[in-house]
Image 1 (cartoon, rainbow, N blue to C red):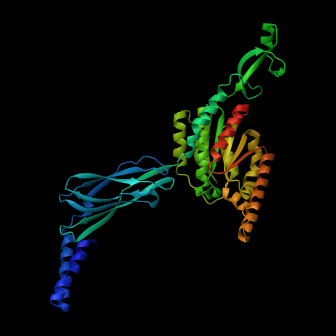
Image 2 (image 1 turned 30 degrees about the vertical axis):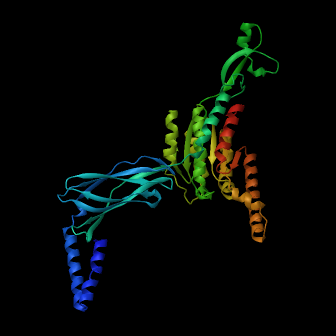
Image 3 (image 1 turned 90 degrees about the vertical axis):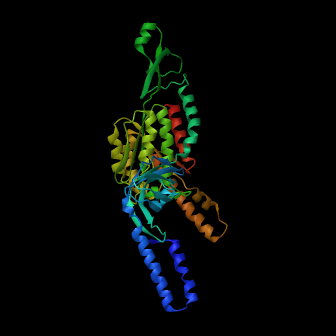
Amino acid sequence: MALTGRSVVLALLGVVPVLLRPTPATAWWWVLAVAILIAVDVLLAPAPSGLLMHRDEVGQVRLGESTSTSLVVRNTGRRTVRGLLRDAWQPSAGATSNRHRIGIPGGEQVRLTSMLTPNRRGDRKADRVTVRSTGPLGLAARQSSMSVPGSVRCVPPFPSRRHLPSKLAQLREIDGRAAVRVRGQGTEFDSLRDYVDGDDVRSLDWRATARRQHLVVRTWQPERDRRIVLLLDTSRTSAGRVLDIPRLDSEMDAALLLAALASRAGDRVQLLAGDRRVHAQVSGVTDRSQLLHRLITTMAPLEPALVEADWRALAGAVAGLSRRRALVVLLTALEPAAIEEGLLPVLPGLVQHHRVVLASVADPAVEVAATDRSDTPHTYDAAAAERTRALRQRTQEALHRLGVTVIDEPPERLPVALVDHYLLLKREGLL
């Protein structure tokens, strides 16, 4: 049961008879009369259990954008149900306009729409729907809550997609250079041409030379349909926030930009995400138009776990995808302890079969703290920042010695730096 504002006003009106006849009996009789009216009103109010509800499916929405959810309410009784309905969601779903005044005649139904603006990535779920059915006097209401399942998937915002047109133009420039031909293993045959001074003698085609009676060499072009494996670390290091954005979200943004560009280049993109085990995987998607959608949908529910990454298990998962050589992009934090204890021991085997790149989100606050020595507290902060930089530099050098390329940039620059490195590999025929 719930009381309305009318019952409060009615109780306050009892001041008038008490002033006219100031006795305790007058006050008690007035309280009794108000209680009886409230009880009668509650008994005459239609039961909320007579309402049947179902929710329309809610589509995906990007983080920071809005969508709507519709609740269909049907009155199975004969009496009109009047009152208030609240469609509750998780706080992170950002539900607004979700309190509705209702007046549903018997046997009819209405559609109630609420707005959702999620402020966290992932699946945001609906809570209970609460209905207050007021009586004919409007003094009190019968209240009931019921579960009406529903959810909205909030996907990564992918802010770096604004760079995609310019990077595609660079990719077309690389692919359109007919004069660029790379010789060596791992390339595709393109055509034959006459030998010129400086050509590698290993490219000589002796059969063609015999037919033409002069030296002929084979020309090659960079292979298409190369494999790109994106390995997304969801362990404890991905939970840290840089510029108030979780590291995991910034790494997703970089992975999506690289995947979008690589798929346009004709390369095959695969995704693994996990910590002590693989939580999500995308592979075998040949339709370029569906790849980005699959990646975004798969990444959306991923959350950091407060555990250390098992890099042996993750490296084994990479090996299980295919034995072909690939560009493996490790999207993880350049944290010295986690890298040196967990990742470095398994890297030699990974580098032996693949080209490995480690992409990490750098914290600009460390660089700022390292330069601020304005007073004693800031000087201590600068010393701590310098030590952090030295440890990261030592770890980065260890990775370089193993043949791993390290890209350590702030969140807004990491996606561009990663795709620029990919384009460099394309341009040099090293992919």
